[in-house]
Length: 176
Length: 348
Image 1 (tube, rainbow over the protein chains, first blue to last red):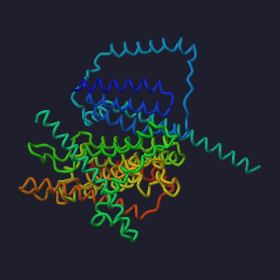
Image 2 (image 1 turned 90 degrees about the vertical axis):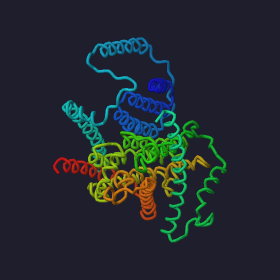
Image 3 (image 1 turned 30 degrees about the vertical axis):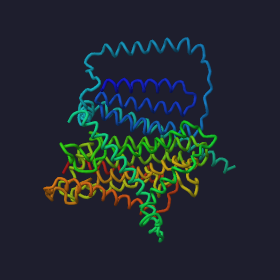
């Protein structure tokens, strides 16, 4: 049962990803990305990570992708034009992708002590997860949150700066 | 219980709950028209059937029979997908909501809940957050400036208020120590009304934040800027007619019912009576099950009446007021509530 569901949603996920690249209209691509996100959530669920699955749906497909579609709608982006791509991209791009993929795969396969998980694994409860996150991995967790805080501050500072420039410009024109 | 029994029970529950939910939606519309009528000093629908009770059925038949018009310049795939998404998300949430006492059926079957999930609360939040796509895509694919404005407003409003909504529920989760809706309700049953989260749990601030954010999430007045008849002529659903329009309409009322159910479960003690465990259960198991159902429906009904009352009373917010209110008032208050609840739980 688990295996059947795994295959179905893995196919969904890959089909969504391929469709994302093939579609020419930004909103179709955004919707394909949502399909990918949700299929991934189902895969997490099959591996027993229920909290991760819910967080994936709420954060990625529920919040971030809404902003994506919001921007697409706001800019009223049209169809992108098909080009054949530059020669450099084809000559360097494809080998680079293959190389990076190979390096990542070998590194991941050689790490030991990662533990194993498969379809139908016992469910990791939210309690277990938070125990690991807030006891064993507290420092990395806090550091990550500081990193995100800095990013937010940076975004606010950039937005403020734009406003300030606009104001000084207005003052200058008024002074004239 | 064998697999076959499980599947049969689940199918039965799904069919019954869906039918009841659809009827509930139809009669919530009637309730709204009646109550708003009384608030505005008129009768509301009273011609079809006794007290207008058959009005929803006639309205439903009318929407089916109307001509289904698809404008020429819409983006068809998404135009057709949008109402299905909206109504689907509104109907799915009910599947994890427990609306009566556990194990009420024969052989210990959970008669009053379709699926008992560990992370029920998160599932509901996830489905609600998907609901915005129905409205957003409807407005965009209609190829109409008013629709587009409506759906832009919807996306911004829902993302903003979802934050306050989610944060306001953290206090309740902290108190129960679980995301399972059954556990959250049973924890409130110990002392009856005195241990409900809104009173004994000191979550009244969270309750009001949830209430306000939920009004915004369901696009109900005073936050119905998405439809705003006076400025957008109906907003995201202008180009829809016949049953497709009715599907958006049903989605809105379905979401109202879902929000009422969640508020009942999290803050008002769910299916437990105001006396909770202080009153021993009756001998008759049938009576107990019926009473739990009665209390749940009564609480949701009161919540729906509140919805209508607010709609009949408050004028619409302005857009900048809406955003300011969400980000500058509701969100800091929700965070304050989390901090206060955590401190209380740590040092009591």
